[in-house]
Length: 135
Image 1 (cartoon, rainbow, N blue to C red):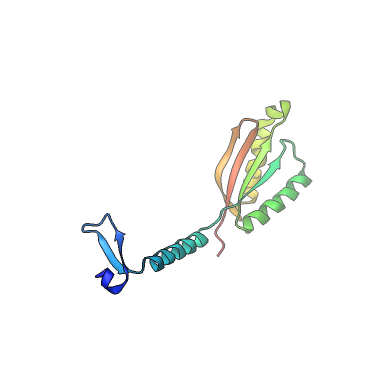
Image 2: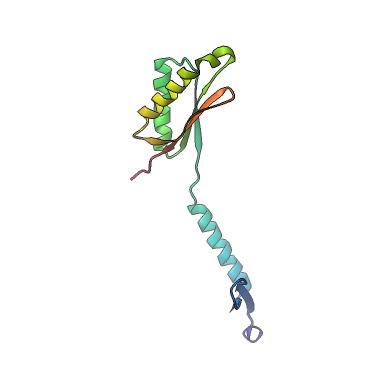
């Protein structure tokens, strides 16, 4: 039947019982399939991760400056990775680093929610904050 019409017999879903086939133009079918995949890919959300680095004894002015940037990143829809970097013997100030990150999380509560609580990984204490959905 396909040869009589000058078209191709295309297997649509081979796993179905019985397999589903259509008589269509194969090139047109492939073109439309690629077009659908491209549209699906365009609709997929691209998550960007912005990083903000603190020291264990970051001053108030520096903290506020970085907090403003964090607010901007969250409002733009990017995830935030805030971390405290411990150099040398400053690792003894782990509690200060954790307090700093928890304070940041509390002050950014209206812009995003904490995805991962502060966790020490090597010389860094890392915390992730995801943006809240914009209505």
